[in-house]
Length: 390
Image (cartoon, rainbow, N blue to C red; front, top):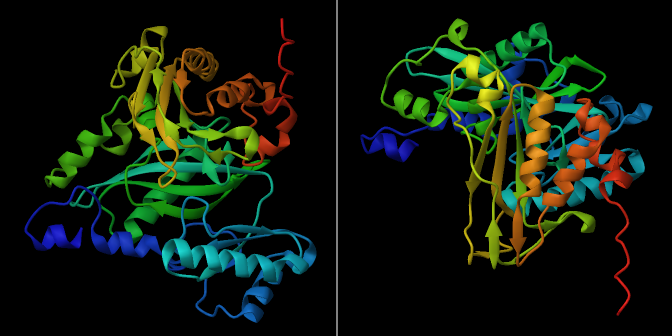
């Protein structure tokens, strides 16, 4: 971003100063504390001695039997993260997290936070222009995760009241303003699954995220167009009172992986690939989004038939996004669309995603970050024996 600006060009994204401010989790949390954005109890200091981290873990609740989370200061994608449930586990967890953080990000520093066993991962899409305008485009729920990475994302988040939506949005806008943000960004919060009104800042992703299509589906807006307009120096196309959400959208990340083997990434050649037909349009007026006329299926592909999927990059090969007039309709539509997906050449998580959509708890909106281990038996049924030879 700095190099683009120095060359006299317009960068489509936030300024380098905003990215640096939010790129370091410990510095970002100090900024958020000053901005009045709620934080989990934790340690975000520079002293990384074991004795300091141990004492701070105890302050976060480890001494009273509450788990804590170690996180790489410059982390992302679940790397450099360890859950610690007792003092006896702490030293090995610190050393392991530091090694992974140093190898992945070139920085071994960690922060310590209280860990919520039953938590909701709720994030808010924000947009800011260079003229001082800032809005939120409502929330997304990304609680169904494996290995600290998202599997299903949906908007709006199940069970979020209008009052909570307003509080989440206001906190996200405060976070963006605190770093003089410009462009599209996502402010991520962790919330107590049993009391989501208690939510806390996790981090800000200073880019347009993988799951942005679900926000486009419920707002009827083209967020990439917004990015271009903002980068051109224009004001935000709409103010907060002019924004509305209608309908419900869910996205499944299609990964090349083996879910039954702890979601181990897979590699190989896509020898055959058939996807469900795309239907409807992403950008639609509110009255259409809220009706059966607004039913939509969208496929965003990262690979085509014949491509090699390597072990050197993220194993996501595609995104499947649907919209329905309500959550139940969106769940049915995504389940049907996943049933039309065909891949030959390497395993995927498509059948696993369908099983998630078949669980009564997911259909009831009872989502949280421990959803997959809690419903392990339903999501990982025994493999049937092969048929006898004829």
